[in-house]
Each structure stands twice: as C-alpha cells, then as structure tokens.
Amino acid sequence: MVALVAQETIVSLVTPENVVGNLVSRTGRHLQRYQKGRRQVVGCIPYRYKCVKQSLDINEEDLEVLVISSQKGKGMLFPKGGWEIDESIQEAALRETIEEAGVTGIVEDQLAEWPEKNVRSRKWMSVAEARKVCQHWWMKEALDRLVMRLTSQQLHGKEDSVGTCSLS
Image (cartoon, rainbow, N blue to C red):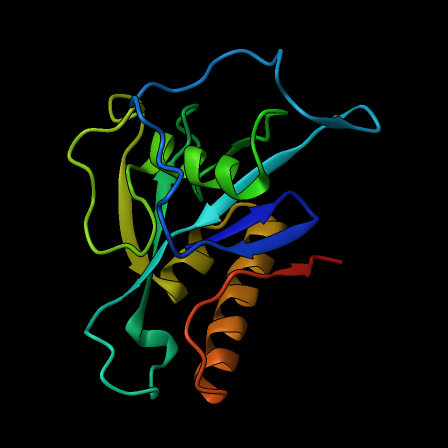
C-alpha cells in the first residue's frame, strides 16, 4: 500500500504490525492534528498485482488499485482521513485504510467486515480506470507517483520499502 499525506508526503506501508485491534471507526476531531489552522489528512493507495510477481518485468497493466466510494456518494476516492496526535503517519494511514476499505499491509486478502462497510463500496481497478475516476489533481498525482515508484523499484531490483517523497 502507499499512503499519502495531503499535499505533503507519500509513505509506502508494507506490514500490518499496528493493525487496529477493534474494528470501530474513530469519530470526532478532538485528537486531530492541525498545521497553520488546517486539518492534517493522510491517505493510502492500496495496490496489488493481478498475477503473482515471478519476475521484475511488471507493467502498469499488471497493477490494480483499490478505490472506495465517498460517504457523500459523489464519486470514488482512495482511503483517507484525519491524522491524530496519538499516532504516527504510518499508523494513521493504516487505520484509515482498515476503517474505510477493509484491507491491511501487503494486500493478499480483504476483510469481509470492516467499520465502514455499510456506508462505502470498494472496487479494484486498473491504474488507467483509476485515473479516470480520480476527482482531484492530487489523487492523480499520487497515483502517478505510485506507478513511477514501483517502476523505479523494479528497475533497481528493490522490493517495496518504507520511505517518503515530497508532493510539491
């Protein structure tokens, strides 16, 4: 999975060590982080390969990303939400992804039940399809950066790793 902080950072998450113990969405904004009066938001682009990776020769057509419906019913988006003061950026991104999409860590399986199952749908789609449904420029930019990052890692023979890069 790849997590993004609104207009700030992309972080790759590859392990579910800090999975939320109880499957209940957090509510309220009393623990939210703010910077210059703006609420800090983190998000994630869950991804998987259509087929088992047997070589480093994986292209964009082999990649699927998970999008979820907006609670307000207006389009599809990537899991995202508020970054709270009692968690790291990685923990916040993982929590939001569990709550809103019902997936964790290296996506090999989906949870049958997740906190927002009754208010959201989820759909795996190709990168090209996801680009078409992305409502905001920053969603398209994050998606493009994910593809570039995975392509670069393949060229250099690296597996997914934790790291950051600026969205500027």
